[in-house]
Image (cartoon, rainbow, N blue to C red; front, side, top):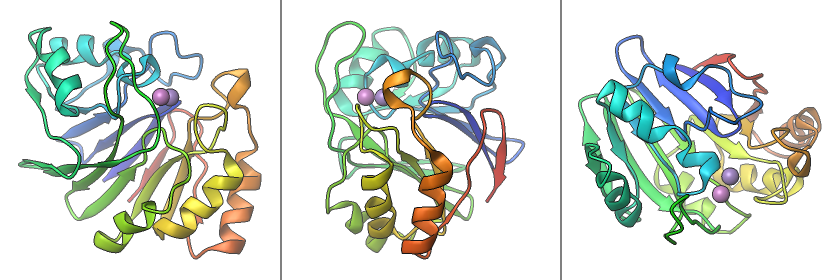
Length: 224
Ligand code: NI
Ligand code: MN
């Protein structure tokens, strides 16, 4: 399975047949690896309603016919667009033929482009034999530890940019709590308020924890 960084907090997980796209903010994203019109997707996962996460989810889902997974209220709003949605709440698991996705807490806020307020989530994903944890947007909180304790994590996709989420220093502690084999940083350097030093994050995590950090440029992939 390949983890491809699409820029900001957007990723595509693919085995060549199935492609799971997470938080596809591409239009208006200065770091977007590809155009929304070129995204292949079989399933789209949306962590929360902010525009830099919901992004092009509606357009990609309409074009590809992919199913969209989001927390109940957000899924309800996306369903009004005529999309095929699955609507778990925190703790809920949605199963597919490629694996499953479970919603876990994220400490953040969430308002959609339409102005409705809902609850943000992290995304715990089983794709084939690999467990991927997209933290969504979050600050550092101790229950991150429960996620990795309950389900050992192969790859954590972790926000590090600060200002809107935890910064790279808090994220070192988050990496220690989660205990993933590999951490891929995201949600940084897209806009000036979230500029940070990903190589410093890598060196701090690798000296303080047992995790390896893989810094991907947009469009680069990591084999998991
Ligand atoms: Ni957000
Ligand atoms: Mn965000």
